[in-house]
Image (cartoon, rainbow, N blue to C red; front, side):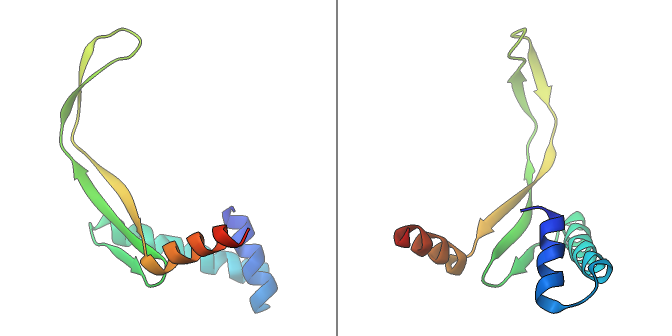
Length: 96
């Protein structure tokens, strides 16, 4: 599913114009990005948690040359599924 698919789905279900739906979706993602950029977690009940983790610097190896390199410290985005959504996904697989 793409962002355009989400906009179209909102358009069909809510009856707003496609432009308004696109603005709503864009703003929703902006809020999430801005919140995560400040190292705050985003919890969406019944869906899951988005959080930023810090990974320490470490040594790595270039797979092509075998040369040892230093991988710098960085932040990565993680997502943990809520139990509610996990149950829904697993229940839908059993019904197929």
